[in-house]
Amino acid sequence: PASRRPLIAGNWKMNGLKASAGELAAIAEGYDAALRARIDLLVCPPATLLAGFSAQVAGAALMLGGQDCHPMASGAHTGDISAEMLKDAGAGAVIVGHSERRADHGEGDAVVMAKAKAAWRAGLLAIVCVGESLQEREAGEAAPVVTRQVRQSIPEGAAAANLVVAYEPIWAIGTGRTPTVADVAQIHGTIRRVLGERFGAEGAGIRILYGGSVKPDNAATLLATADVDGALVGGASLKAADFLAIARAV
Ligand code: PEP
Image (cartoon, rainbow, N blue to C red; front, side, top):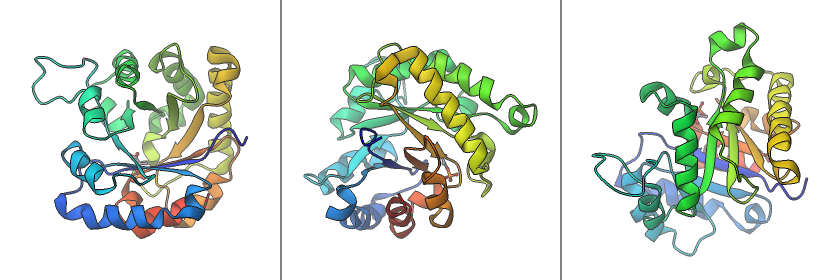
């Protein structure tokens, strides 16, 4: 529906130095009036670059975001970054529950939910990631796993204005493999149904992104799939030309 404005989000992961300013500039410049009229565009660089990038694109429509946040606002948590700090550095959104965080840092659904709440406390859009492993997919458990994650990682009070869900099958991330259109439609339909059960009419406005090896050559197909409201892009978001090609494929 028209109420679900497409969102193309780039996750730079642990990539990018100050010298990446040129890539950001190219993305900001490519996000022209024609594109701005149709879609939201978000870049999530490493936290070290947020403040500088924010100054660089000040006044532009391009949104910046963090890749993770701590549940607390401040305190004795060496090395962690709070949602309030991301907001202060210029973020408008934050990714939580990315599968790399779930795997590398042992984050379970309860922690992800706490981080989503932290995002809201700071006034950030929370992008909550869900997705099954290859083992779960092959056992026929993709839908139940994703259903559990949507029930247990997303706090009460989710609405179109504060939440985006990203479906990222773990086996499709960084591998060049993607699910079939039918599989994407099935899982997105499942997520849409669970959001409807939990959040009623408000759930119908929450955007669901697909993520996992989205590239310029498969973007149009994936983005035209039922219940796909945009994409979360990893590798291909590092090159402005590729990222913009994906955005234009909406
Ligand atoms: C991601 O990790 O969010 C992702 C989608 O990565 P890639 O596009 O590189 O598969």
